Image (cartoon, rainbow, N blue to C red; front, side, top):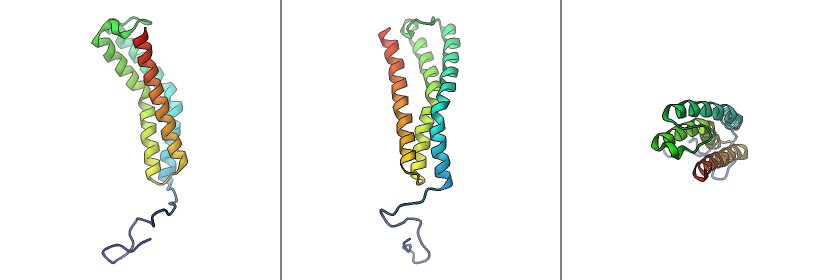
Length: 132
């Protein structure tokens, strides 16, 4: 540790390049980032149910593209997709926070995997709607 500029005590910053021991908080953040991946099953199910209920209200038939329902259909898709990918967005954030707290490759891998699945899920959902 270095002496602080004020002369008394030490600062929290270590020597540049010095490895930092991850805290228990960093371990928990990283664990929760990994747990967001299996939570995707629950969130996609809930998002699908909400989408079907709201879709029936605005006139989107199951199996038909949302563009047939206009802006209301796209709004339903956006809401149900947001519900579905919420754990993935949280997983990216949790992994980045874990990395900031001192966790190493596990936090980076959790963030990266959550981000890749998030992009794929949103991309495939939009592609399916635009191609239909």
